[in-house]
Each structure stands twice: as structure tokens, then as C-alpha cells.
Image (cartoon, rainbow, N blue to C red; front, side, top):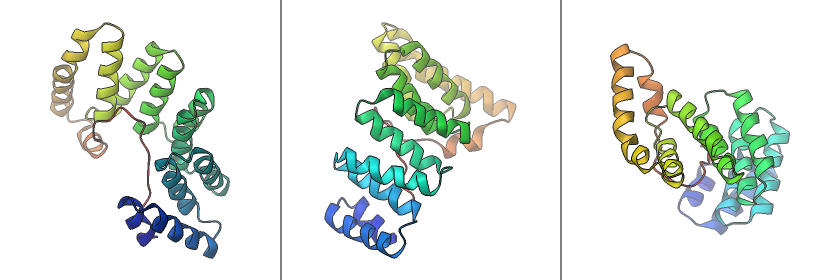
Length: 193
């Protein structure tokens, strides 16, 4: 698996593809390899192939939250908003504190014309992971797009104050920092190592 991941992260599509296929020839029931192969296809915008591999991972392990989340991302990129939202709901039913799925669900809600529900989802994500940069960024974008530019600009200050209050109360700091993500306006994916 390590060699396939190495080539995948290095952006060497053909080499990674060859290694993932070799892994799956040895063990067709390797859900992790199907998940990562699905992400490789997603990176190359081969969304039908991505969906197929991610579905295989889910069939092998129906409780595999990362595969459900990644499948939701693929569906969202295919403009299948309702199906994507269903995958993110599945993740959250299995792991109610999964911030990546909350942010992705918010993006599906936004894409589906529900910006207020998207804001609620992002605020819930921030309640769990106050340092989640993807939740902050996407919430700021939503505020800005809805004409609430002052809230978008003020969001970093409010978040710092909220984190300070959480630290003073002694709650939430470790899990939140562990979940911090790079700022991005795209959906979150999980390559498993």
C-alpha cells in the first residue's frame, strides 16, 4: 500500500494505478485500496470510475465513513446533490462528530440552494472543531455571498474569542486542533494510509 500511496501523493497517476490494481489482484476485498483508487480516479476527474471504486469499498465495509464521505464528494462533483447529501448523512449517522462530512454536507446544501442550512451545518462543525479552517472559510464565503460581508470579515475575530473561551473553560482544545485543515473551497477527501 505504501508504494501506491507514494505514487498517488507524488501525482504519478499511472504508477499509482498500477500499484493499486496489483493490491486488488492480491485481495479484491481490500476496502482501503478501493477507497484510495477511487480518490486517484477522482483526482483525474474520472468520476464514474471513482464512484465505482468507492461503492466497492462501501460494499466491502458499509461502516467505512471515509469511503462514504469520498463517495459523497464524487457525487457532488457529478452534480448529484441529493445523493451526495445522503452519503454525508450516512457518515454523520456513523460518526456524528465528523467535521469533514459536516463541511461537505454544507457544500451540498449550498449547491442545492439551501444556504441557511449550509450556514447551520458549518456552525455545528465549528462548535466541534473551532479551528477547522475549511468550515471557517466556507462559512465566510456563505456570509459574503449573502451580503453579510461584515460577518465574513469579522469571523476570524469571533472565532479567536470563541476558542479563547473554550480554552478558559478547559474544553475542546485537543480534538479541535487535531482536526484543523488547510483552507480550501473544495470538498474534503480522505486518503487512508
